[in-house]
Figure: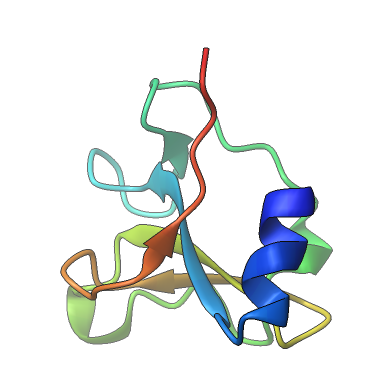
Length: 84
């Protein structure tokens, strides 16, 4: 969490978190293949919406209370990774 806090302080507002629904629309999974099981109330209003059929990656929008969003996978963003 310190890393995310540091990014917010440095004005980064959108962060990749390594989840996507590439295999099955609406079934978000981590890069490891594990199911993404966050509370549905954390999605931004109306999300995930797969706008234009092109939004398969998961981002955190740190400037909002409900902060999960689906977005196109080619957008450049900062990332948060888990080291195992």
